[in-house]
Length: 406
Image (cartoon, rainbow, N blue to C red; front, side, top):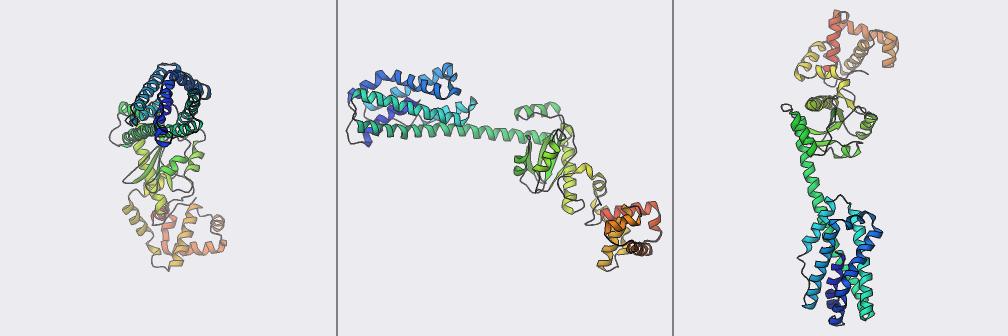
């Protein structure tokens, strides 16, 4: 492949220089030297690029050798006919790049081998040129032409490599979207179909998973910070990540780090066929965070707020309860109403323990007693009945902007 660049550039040199056509004896000298130059190129690659040492010995290497020899013949024929070699072989070099990707070799290794081959081609050309009596200025110009054309061919190879890499990435992403759609479909949980989709997507199906719901519609930033391979996507309700083994060693801490700075809620850990439930719960929890109904410090876990999620699952009903049970406070001035709501919340949370309420509210116990007496004036016997206190606590959680303490 590299010798092809050498021979093709004999013509480029003819056009670029003022020394006239390359004499027939130069071409005659190159033809018998080609096998030796090819061997020199292959030996250099084996020596300097170990990843290719075995490749060049197997059938794939034989194909490369034959390709080089055929390309060289084509270029020499063009020289003899006084024409520029055709660029019709560009696709051949792109195919070579595709083959390198499919063989699992990385692009850096390919580029390194290409540079090695180009240097070996130049050394071989210099030796042939010196033996044939080619003037030094022509040899120098020829070297420049070799590197220019080798760069052109290298561009074709890299383009082919990146082309198939992009195609593979696109296909992989399409398959992952298909897998996610199967996992998150609430009506279709065919285990065999899911297992097959996971195999095609190259995503090992975990024993357990959880779905992370995110504000906004771009999960990429959080996905990049994850310490595990996740499925990422968006739909009409926002962005999400399917997280495998969410309770595994170190995973909870890694999740918190990954969502730092983002608003996110994690659904319950479930088996794959129940991923849709984890998504539904994570989004219910995320809605509570966005409404201010639960705290948003760090990662919010749906399982930490099940009671609030249940209470607010019917928003209209919850607001009706809050409006009815807290009606005695509505006629008060805003400042007094907020003070009494805060006191009532602490009074219920601390089970009517005055010192605890005072410490929570950072006020004097006597202030607590005064406020509680005021609450008794407004709510009467409701404060002394277990069912009344229960409904008041529900109402406080359900009111717009309400939030559970702790």
